[in-house]
Amino acid sequence: MEVRVPRILRDTLERNPDYFPRIRDSVERLATEIEQDAPLPAPGAPAPDVATWTAAHAEHAGESWLHAEWFHAELSVYRELASRCRFWETGRDPFAPAKEEELSGDRPWTRLEAVLALGGTREDRLRERLDGCLWGNRVDLSYTVAAARGRQDDDLIVDERDSLVPLLCARAASVHVVADNAGTELALDLAVVDAVLEDPGAHVALHLKMQPVFVSDALPADVWRLLEGMIGRGGDVAALAGRLRAAFEERRLELWPDPFWSGPRFLREAPPHLERALRSARVVLLKGDANYRRVTDDAIWPPHEPFARAADGLGVPVACVRTMKSDSVLGLPAGLAEQLSASDARWRIDGRRGLIQMYGA
Image (cartoon, rainbow, N blue to C red; front, side, top):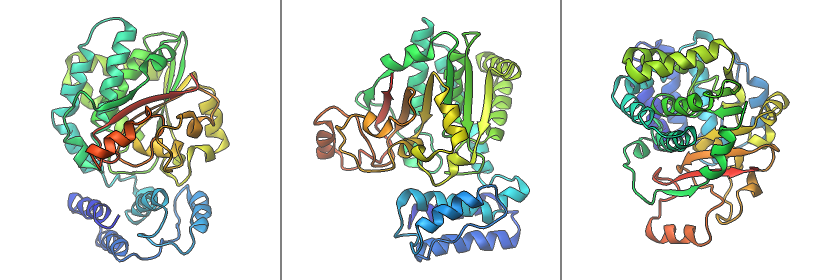
């Protein structure tokens, strides 16, 4: 919070040199306030989430940037940044230049082409595409140390695809996917969505952020920009974009932005409309570290405890697909956490290890 987050804010200013001077001054003040451990600011208007954030802020009265609950403080940064950049008034994503730079490179396209080239049965292809979308979660523009990592044989420490793939392949399945990062990760997520939609009776709801958060998290505009890039790429990638656009037109693929996904609440506190939607699914697929933290209350659980201890609230099967960039974890084989801690003190947070975990199947 004291080093990485202010760096993200200042990098955002460097990437947006044409911001109004008062916006620039306000964002620089935010970086300084965090470094100096100022009190958490009260949420202000205009924004559609004022009531939610006002209630949450009251629960953290008197806390400061460096002495607050981490989940609340980290999300408060991005909420405050959107306010100071006047996102709700302009619609301008302060992270758009970073996202565009990611799309202009080869990484999204070469990884997507590789997974689309894999053959086999639908089940086989879903297994491989899930593998791709798991490691795509390393490409997080707010935590670049993870994006630079290569794959090693022992990086996948929980793999419950045998429980997940049959649910994704179920006839006329309704699948809710809660997206994480735009760019490379979203491209690989959409390869999974495409395989689900091979069943003409299947439906996918793709849940997205409404507000820029964690630098590269996906907004609806990022989906359309990615599809545009896919079409420009040509070949199998363009064909994928064509299938996804057709599914969208048929309402078999829907985009569901909601302020909850960038807000201060855990999944057990989801608003009724969102809880009802998720409960209607055959399976809910939650991508990324922040969504895992929402499931587990961002708490330090005994790592060998069953995953269902934290994640049994929705009443439908839920899968978490995540590379580890924070401390919370459950469902590990007995003794594995101790073994990893003995050899790598940063194994929970360095983005190397991956998990595909299920409950409720």
